[in-house]
Length: 264
Length: 288
Figure (tube, rainbow over the protein chains, first blue to last red):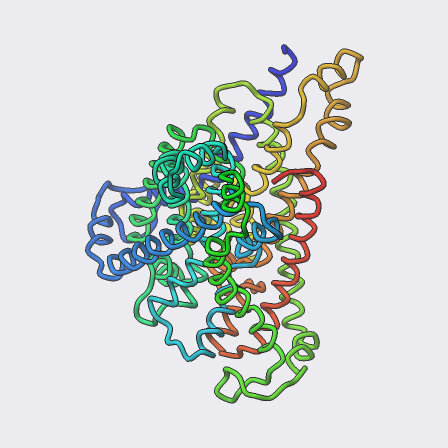
């Protein structure tokens, strides 16, 4: 036990340095979002919230945010529904090729997002489907399916089947079994599934870049296009808000799930 | 009688439950994939998208094209670099948080998870700011007198590697952390009791037992970096071309979809290949 101290100190210091490295972009973003000037200066001069005001006034950002939110919410809910059914099937039934089905549900995460993006683009183009809100949502559903699945399945498998069986023997319908027994136990898992899917969908760039209707862009696409042109302090303001959101989410996760589901 | 009905209810194949997902994925994932294979064999139209003519030309074009081969090599180089950096850094972090009992070690995971909730675009932009000529890094070096003029950190391959290494670090830490947690501490105690030094304990017990996590992490990071688009595009400033940018260019700029499909297929096949290794090893070491 005494040996640990030496090792702890060295490794701990290195780890902290590594964490500083990981956080340097985020730190820069947040700190410089409060600056007074048009350009990025370090250490930041002046303190001003004007970039936040500009960001909030910007029509581009607002429209982007709304579109991203709409797509994310819609895609997450639909994925959740699909995956609830799927994980219910896996956890409560035994059927042939169950393992393969489970793998299939996770398959979108095995394929690079950019490949999913181009394949969908070509597919829709072939079908002569105009690129629209719907095509965007479809793409986002595909990529969020694995996330909901990975969260829901272990939890459902952890709920003892004998609860179901007892209720069924006592005459409850399957739907009521779900409603009164499974659903209450699933609430935290459903919450996490929706949260993860939302974050993945909202922050996604590759898919949205290819599948957005020209003229309407999701927030990440707007940010990307602005970032390509160079520095823009209003970007910092938006970025800081993201960071704030991330901090809140992590704190919430700390309180609820505890050691975050590190199995990702 | 009731038991039989119960069994029937419980053990039929639940077509109703599994078909929605299967349908969605079949139509919108598998079919488009078949598409990309087909389109890669098609000749591009003058307009750019595709024609009806079948050809191997695209593949020949790709492999003869030194520019594209260079991109492929660069993608591999970048991905390998990112993977190696993350391996070293990630193992240290994973080791620390799994073996240390200090308060600091217990809050580090939160710091690793938090950036994951911030979109990639934003973190990449943060790197642009951080590494820029007037950004904190240069200002810091100048203020302590190491350099006189700002170093051009950005718009090159190193910037891309540095940025992506940061982005993928959690993907390396978590699998390794998972396997390290499972190591039975009594093994290490027993080894200490019979006189093994710390180094020996690490090399002969900890390292081999965490090997599964190491491989999993490496594959995750390599695959992720291999198909990356955002970081190379933003941090490379257009000068660093990897597969991701090439796909973007061919699909949205030059509109040569067949050639773009070839590139996409290569990215896909490499990912598939590596992930199948991951899955096979996963079964062997029982990770996920």
